[in-house]
Length: 148
Image: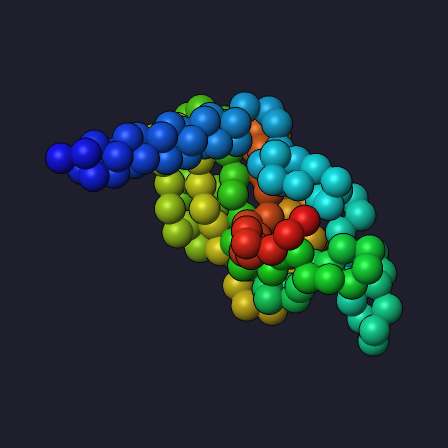
């Protein structure tokens, strides 16, 4: 019985942690800032080109983002996490930006996919200029077991 109690308590603690993380994203703070504030500065994303670390001028799905030493820190999935203003149609918004609507919450939090070959930075810039967008971030795959 003790083992079951420990498992239940562990699951509850995990669920509470996930809830706190989700609430943090829905506020005006950037999810990327929460994950690794010293690594992610959307104005200075770094990539490795010909063994040199440079500021990303363009970014494509699967192109690794690196730290200043060239170590891989995240991989763009080709998707965007977007919070739209209340009353904005997610379907119409995704069609206007030529993006595929993969997921939507009840409060207009979206996961949208860019077509293969898209310049993700250009698409993100376009999305952020739309006054109907409250928040927009790149969706990044990360290895959370990697030491920061």
